[in-house]
Length: 420
Length: 83
Image (cartoon, rainbow over all chains, first blue to last red; front, top):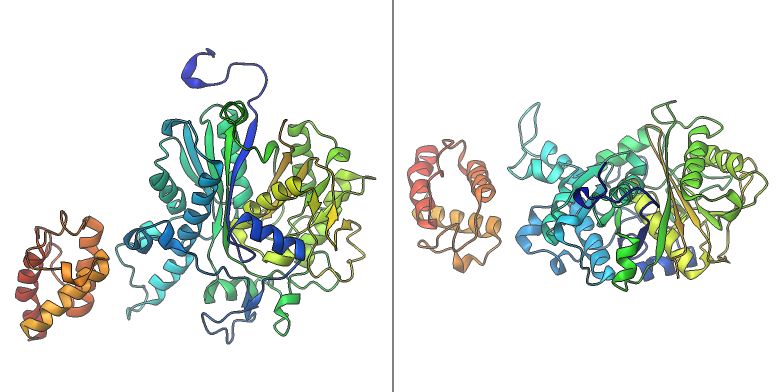
């Protein structure tokens, strides 16, 4: 291949990827500072659902996002053409782009990659339930563009006039992490010099709630919603459905340094694997997760002992947390790495979770602190891990973030301190 | 259905779909140029008026340029359905 083709990097050292912008809309905060404060305080955001009747649905609570303040980002007409999932994405991605500051990257060299588990679930459900026709719903002309999974990538591309690649990925609960990883690959391989990437989810609907309950994934601690999401705790009984969005701006590190950007971290390691095992359950020993973490370490050129902290997938389901604990022990061996799960605070925002946790990992690295795992009262004796129950200082060293999706899709991201 | 009722329905639906002040939805307002309507808006208008009046011909609003054109078509079509 000619080194001169199409802006692609010549053979030699790999293009490094900087994180230069963060934006979030989560139950725990509408900006990274709020999110961090809530995580550090270990405050659960699960509340009784008041927006619809939960009678007969099993779980009666969720982690919901207030607002969002779409009017600051979109005209009323633009907003009316986007499902809530894309509105959350536009707000978070817009904040991440603002946070990155003025960039010099030509629009043709910018990319957007989004992840979502359900896409426009609220619109989809409303379109099918509306109307009086047996056997079909009553979708309007906006139904298709509002339910499609790529609506988020489209809206962000249009709003920011991003002219390079735009696409969406769907790997269930790993979608947000996969989106960030795929964006990093676009920057690494020279397809783009800047990418805004993240995940969004807004699927707290009666049918989705019931569906998760029926596959026995949800906590039914209805009398104590704030105690329900308890990753790695002996008494965990399932996850708490959440919504939200989180986006990062990734840039070619050299370009970011050249423009004097504030660099939060380097996205130094990407790991991918598949369980090839079962549509919902992880393999007992967490083999797929372990292979994923090893792949990320190899990609970053790091050893387990160099990881300061693992932000676990830690969904609070009995099966995930046990398999993930075994996987972490497979990979880290005698290294007792501090592990935390942000889902104790935020609940499980499905396709946004991996992106929210990527932001949490970057913030932990910058704040030199590991936030606590909310509701960890008694560590499950089968989860032989150093799970952080109270905020703890940590060195400015690499942080790993795990995401695992139904289907056996695994993604691990490693963030390293920004090069000085 | 009286002419006033038809006018009220069209104006309210246009304002809602186009996200404009109902005062701007005058008979001589150009849908695309003045009210920034596009093909999806006109498709929405079609569906919402069908919800009101029952099925309308597919091309009912294909060549409308102004709010007045929509009204004229609505005046032709609405009485047929509502008697």
